[in-house]
Length: 343
Image (cartoon, rainbow, N blue to C red; front, top):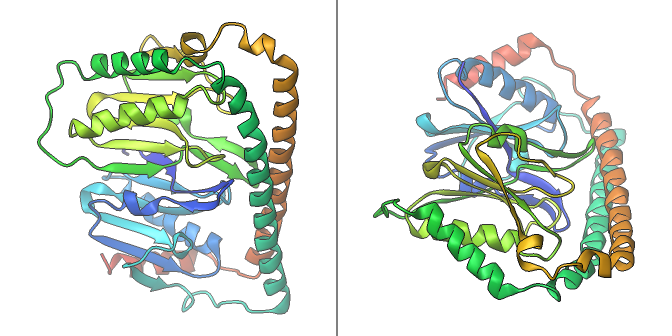
């Protein structure tokens, strides 16, 4: 069995539900979209297909922002093949309707649960958006104490060392956009340990809000791309305009924002730390603004908690919707067999 990759292409954020699937279709010649209102049915079919392919193929599993019980799809690069659910909403796909195997439901209580699900999701996004605006005040504190020239020198030095001795490729590099985690009905989740475990060069980026962690990674990613190297940019699931992880496979390299709520510490000899607070912020800033920082942290986290509570409620309504559908392993096997004839 091969080592499967796991990441997200959709996420619940302060900008609503984001979808980064298109950039991940690079090289895929056939994309099959499973169509049905039941996310659990589509997930059961996807898992059955994964069990078939993973014996011989490297698979990229697309996790779902709806939680561990769901999947958004998977990609097999070597076969230029992808299977997704219609929830991902991508054009130019081969549609495969599952309603001929499991009947759709259109009862009044199903419609009511669906409406409540959407309402709770939107309420979550509204709270995340408010939390982000509050969080901006935290960034302002550190930006005012930031030495940007020092940060630029640090970035340029890092890029020089990273690309030293690496021959520039005469090709147009590709940029993949993803998330390593997101906000779900079960809380904040991430796949960082899984994503970083295979790399020989791993950097934990430490710092504070507004100290340029995202900018640091964006500039490094841009330099690698200009060098002809494909890059993977993993967006922040709070503020998707920010980057929380950079992977460059040709360099055996992974770098990520290692601060709350996804803080880790170097646990291997091949892992190192870059601390932008120590390197480029006026010493004593934390202490100088301690009261303001604590107040802002408390305020924005309260909105995050409210948003997560709304996602939990949305998840409960999704379960109510799923209760309208019943299917068994025999039906899933039949769907899988029929799907295999379309490949």
